[in-house]
Length: 184
Image (cartoon, rainbow, N blue to C red; front, side, top):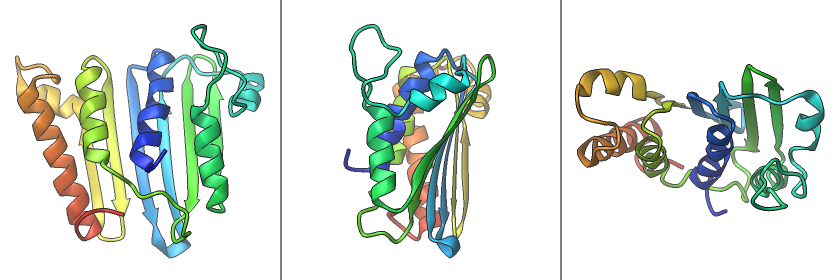
């Protein structure tokens, strides 16, 4: 995968498959401590400790449609290549958090990519799921919460094209503002 937004897309699919109704995505640009931290937290079915131990193995998957699951294995390899790692916290019935850490200034760290498009697509394709996106950078903080948008748009659906475009623009402008234009 070329950028972090694609890892987000893949990891969130795991949360959707785990029947999550709330998915929180956060990106923390901790430049002072030389870390970029990606977190995906959900309220899905969760996993027991034995499953958590196996989950980054590409030949372990809970899917019945194929025999391999590469998403977590790929993000783990990318994080480790950047002096980081993947940390998974989960409890059955309570949900899961996948935390991915990269060395911020590592030459091989993937760029953020088009997170605005990724979050907009996730919301548009899953309008019944609540999404919260938080991005913390040295110059500020951005927070998007689909529950707040849902309250403001009344009868419109979150997958209405004008709403999806507004979400994308809101996130893009927010990232530009806190990252000094263009993100990382």
